[in-house]
Length: 60
Image (tube, rainbow, N blue to C red; front, side, top):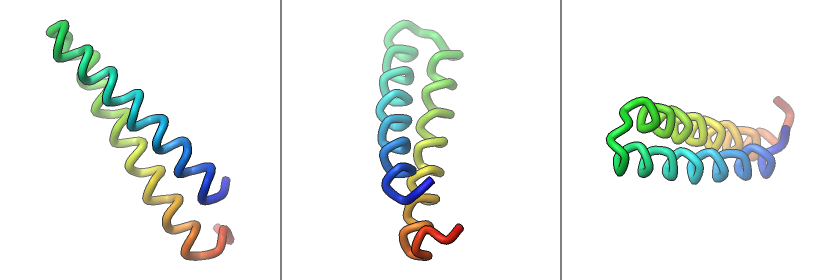
């Protein structure tokens, strides 16, 4: 995967995670909140991976 692919997936995971987290808070569902937080963390990791790939010229 290239830099743009990683960054696009990262954005999707961050958005989906935020939605899950918000719904979990609104419905008092700790499991859904935790899933949302985990998905946001995954998105952050993908964002970092994309940045590194961009700096290394997609040679990973």
